[in-house]
Length: 337
Length: 207
Image (cartoon, rainbow over all chains, first blue to last red; front, top):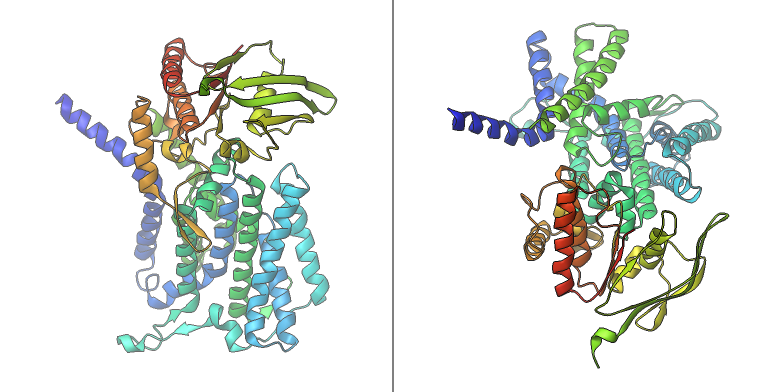
């Protein structure tokens, strides 16, 4: 009897780390099942599922960038503005008649440089917190985007430029119907997330990013050039925002002044729902993906059920608080041994 | 000639200012191989500052450091590590979110290189960690255990294990038994004693 109880106990304790790692996926699966029962005909249809992925495509890039920053115990409030500025530069370069391969690269370079600017500002100017630097650049980048475009939308890109955000991979050779295509943006999300999963978990730089978030003094004392790693992280975050701009250009066929407005908050929310800790050092790429999916499915599901967008705001806010509270409870269970 | 007398580390007229505060003034220190030296002083006497200057975490405002007779300028703790000088910090300088092994090898991880990318060799880290912990008779559940799950004494043991994992010539320990329970103090002192037999030089800072 006693040993049985112990077995049960140790099984429970063994499950805790798995719950920590995959608990958020469980929430995602529950949401999908619930939505399926609420909207059995529509929700899991090919059209709707690809639609969800198309809707989260650019947000998922911002969230991934912000996630790496949050792992270092930092914050990047400027990702929405970086995306908007990169999008505007792309639009201007496209309108100037540059060939598509130049147009496609410009937002990536612009995003990277914006991120580099953030990183250098935080480290060289010795800002007391990344919040301040990126709050400043939130205004600077969006203002610059409006300055160079005159604050008006610039529309009309070629198909090559729109490919990543708008392209379709035909699956009729698999015996599927013409409407059952694979959005290129879905494939892009998968590739980018796999690359960054490898980067964060398998490479030395990724390990150092986690170490800086865990204890920056330990990282410094171990001879890690903390400032250099921070500059790399913010630059990569900007680069991912640039990819987001490229996807958005494809989706909307337009560079417009309100692009990515408040999307930095969505990105932060996705990271928090996905289990990343604001204190740094904690969180997984898989968790961020789940966080982005949860927000995307929630919006999509509520739209399908004709729930007003005001309720969506209330629900997403509640999920943020609930997700973190579940995390607090989990920690309690984890320590009461 | 006995290597025990060899001069390893010498600080000449080391001075360190923090703003208007003079933390160290003209400190001279000689450390020979095989020697165990304790630095004693009041709170705020500058013991920790001196240790951090020796390890390269702080740059001295004036004066110089000589290692095995040659003057060295330490730009970062990496430089002192490369010279064979290891430091155990008072706040331990461990990343709680990382496992024991990754803390021991933090900054010096064995890697497989693929162009610019350096991939961690997790298997080697685990093997080396287990072997090293075994050699020092440090008992932990597993090398994969996160440091934040360890007791104060175990953490101290991990910090000491890190300082001895790379054939250090000089090990500096800053208050190695501060903030520990009496039982754990005994364990850490045992560990230091067992090190003394194996290692050439140690320098403890204990007030």
